[in-house]
Length: 288
Image (cartoon, rainbow, N blue to C red; front, side):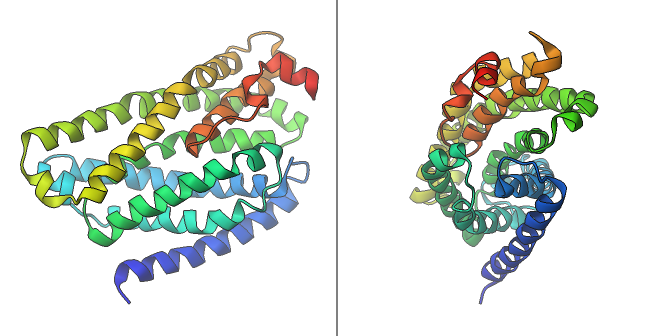
């Protein structure tokens, strides 16, 4: 059995054990969560998203300098990023059917579509050892999920806990909004244009990449960017309302950012928002 397959299998086992642990932690620490498996997913993200984000950032820094490194370069970090993403998607596909929130059930088809695309794109990159720089560039989007996970944890906490840590919540919401704009709305198109310029002006990329990669990678990026643009307004609006405590701040501190939470979660999985995410915080409060 080759090294890539062994790595993916090993990481799959690790992530199964990690999810089992997080379910136990969620049951003990977040008994008031709207859904046990939603809470466990959020706890899981506290270690997973920072790890993937840091590895992706290191990979981009190490491989950006030349055409050959961007299209054929491999580092120890990129050899871990791909299998991490693939193994997590493999584990998370059946996990999706455990989550019982209305929003998660409605978005399940989009979650599944996203997961299978990630498995195909990053699995191909892991086995071929090509285009690791571009895969790492797409994975920079996980920086937004670092802060989104904290917001999800707050959504699982009691109101008194939310109010006690309101300053942390506000700062985290600020970084969530900033990371969303920087990574998803600025860096993604930069990476896309960069790749097009390499393809147009240098012969090496066409000799390195295969047709499947030349179709799959741009499709993934355009899909993520398009959805990011579509939901940028509710994300930014929800972040501003939370940070500046607009309109009855004592009552709506958490509710305001929930608009951003659900919209960003939809973008993160290449799906659409729930019906509740389209409402203003005041409207959401009236229906609860």
